[in-house]
Image (cartoon, rainbow, N blue to C red; front, side, top):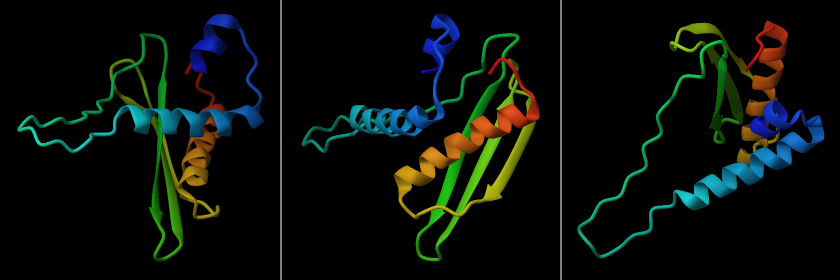
Length: 122
């Protein structure tokens, strides 16, 4: 989605973000499922952070979901091209305790935070 906006000057409407995020997450999970096998080969998935290009910022968001106590928290961090933290925030949020909704909300909060903090381009 970001590449379409940046390279094709496409306008992304906010109502399109949540379905795209959910589909992206589901595709990612499907592509990274480790199927049990009888072989001795161990597979693992390593996620690592990579910096943005020079002159850009990268925003990452994540969430914590405590279904037992009905609590949800979101964290957002913005870094520069050398990995320096430019801004960060965390906040409790009130959303339905559906992981897909919480994840989409975390990403949306990330977009809002980036906009409010005045970071461009991200």
